[in-house]
Length: 178
Image 1 (tube, rainbow, N blue to C red):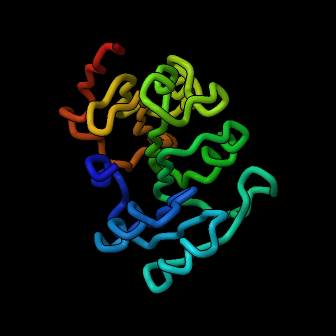
Image 2 (image 1 turned 135 degrees about the horizontal axis):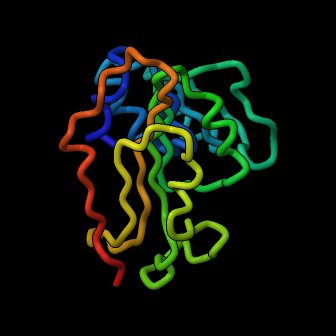
């Protein structure tokens, strides 16, 4: 996530969805971003008070809790609930960036999650971001800890004044899966 932070408008409004203990929210707050963390775990969110806005919400059982809000970035890691994808895209401000990483098919070999309902199929994250400007995409195996993931950094391209992504961040060569 950190390597894509330069794509976010300085001081921008950032949503950390299913933020848990707030690893990314904490770092983003220290970088001067206006952050909001959403999670269903009220105790985890309580520890984040003072860093930004927090919202307790069950994203899988209730309605989208941020209707009408737009974000310069939406960050999602280690969480997959496919019915949210349209809401995530709609929550991007013009020029906003979606930074998403979660487990992929093949992860069951290394541990949890192993349920196929919570593992991205090959190319699925790319398909979910169709119509956005793909800055980077990776699909493969990571060694520490061992896991299979897909990652994407994708930008809403409707805002023509958004600076281009650095060229080196567009060159991605995902490793082969074991």
